Length: 454
Ligand SMILES: *Cc1c(COP(=O)(O)O)cnc(C)c1O
Image (tube, rainbow, N blue to C red; front, side, top):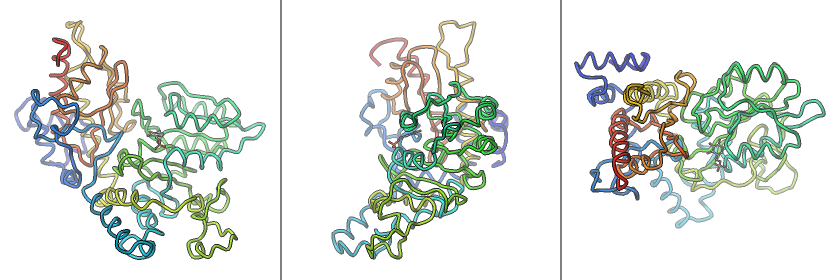
């Protein structure tokens, strides 16, 4: 019954409940999906916190020995089990062979990041030499903009989505001209329309891949084509897209992209950032800032002070790479490479569709019950226009509900006054997690409307 995963999610729920002879909201449906989920064993590669260990948990309300309901993979992915092992290997190397660790061992420090770039490239749909792992996301965004944004009298604008993430917004402030912005909620037609109308004065189109607040997945392929038709460079901040949706940065002809690795890529807080420059630019787009790590590896350590710049994004490297950050990212990318983004996405569409189905079932606006809180999903309902995250806007202030969820072992994200962002990650979340979340949300809503204590 694996083919349920290819149906429209609401239809899959109906068919599963008919087959099982139970209500579509029954936990049996979740168990059935889990049973037929070919990716479910990947959860075993991650450490899922126990409810008792989470600081806000209230053990008088919930069984602390259970795994928490972790829906925060859009913010900080879970720890891959091999992260600790790999880090310990390098701590041991440092202790035992010190300086020799640069060239000896399972991941010689002097080129450690090169060993995992292919694993990374597979996840973003790029060639190995189009990807560099370095710095943090904001730094990479600045480095790329310094090289791609070359304003002229007539072509000087940057087009980005409104309400972009602060770093993305700030990086555009270095530009001396006003940027033109699309409206809060972005229909692809409107974006393409603006590019068509204003493209001649736009130097760079810089969008998120997936918008961090709304969860909207932008049509990167179409936006790239439209930008190129008008002679603009097109780049994407893939912070919320990488490890979440299928990316084909190379095939789409995207000029540049960057991302962080601690969200869906599970590399740990402040993990190593990623950057992509399409191979078509490898000999023409040069880094604005140079460092010894951009020098060809063969002659890097001869220290002649004659720069032999590596082509493409590799030449953008500045410093030697932090081996202790390479380790957890390697642990996670190895898991991603045991499957494919296509397979993960197939599960994700049903997993998030199931969440949407249950939210709509329980929390649609009901004129017959005017006092009942309801939820509006501000993420697009078309699975092709979103990743795994749903942004839920409640009809009531949500702080107390959020606290009641936290006490009961749910992690998710609140934006005042009334939005919850929940992100079931297909790599380690289960259908049972989604079902438990919905049950717990019901309890949290009841608790926060009836008393002020829980
Ligand atoms: C998470 C995120 C960042 C964070 O930047 P860091 O440099 O990693 O701290 C920046 N931009 C977007 C769009 C993000 O989602």
